[in-house]
Length: 364
Picture 1 (cartoon, helix red, strand yellow):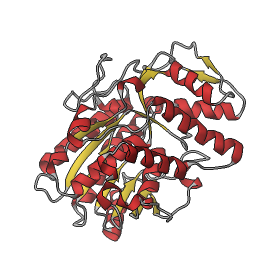
Picture 2 (tube, one colour):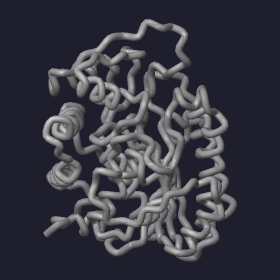
Picture 3 (tube, rainbow, N blue to C red):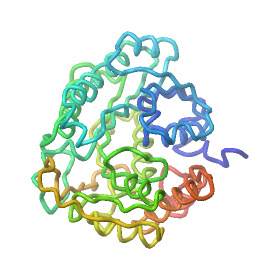
Picture 4 (cartoon, rainbow, N blue to C red):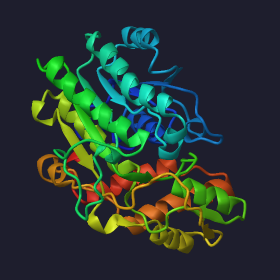
């Protein structure tokens, strides 16, 4: 009764399956780990310590094996793979902040590029591994700030060190697909998502965390780029895509061993200012000011994904529109700050219920 039928999602693929999640202490990683555990998977998490307090990982009930380590430490990674023998690897561990990457380029490149190489190397030396889902970012594309979305075959690139490192990680993925994972023993795919929001994110220099932290202190949040447009989506949206990829790869479908975009519908591509206005409707404590400092590092003003490939070939579709996404996200934080309540399980169950109502294939 605890998992309320979640074990049957994705064709029941993850029940009793040994899954390794790198970056499990991070925002997306903690949500993915939680979802996998609720489906009956045997989850091994490998990550650095959480870098914020509070953090989503530590406030959740634990039913997984948590190992603290650095993906750049190949010997430790090899030991984890040899000991736990995962069948599928979800690689999310990364230095994920754009502004931080300007000040720490060596850490950013070494983690996001060489760390990815280390994960692939450990996987290819482990006989149990059948599938790898490498998570990069929508920022992996060479962003020309076009008014249309980027497709999976558009060039990789990146202005800032973070974006460039994710483009490099995609090139590494392509190289390993052709050089090592082309015999079918291990299938490797990459997932690229837009801006994700949801409860439990307290990272620095992210819009929703900055807003809710300020609101909890009855302060105004300082906004850097109110006209910047991004593809906003709830964290569970791309996770459903990553889990679909794992499902297909574990079933040995080589057609899915490619790059895939997982982004929202076009109406979810809105400006930072509009997001704040929507947030204010959900929480009256929210207030903001605009940072007039023009000496900030470069940040893209427009970035969108074309998800036609996932929509048509995988039958992956978003579940929640922008209004529901913002309501669920802000209500999570309101419940946490005002009632000391964690809505993660409720949000997951509501998301699955909505997906079932829409007859999405992963719910059948």
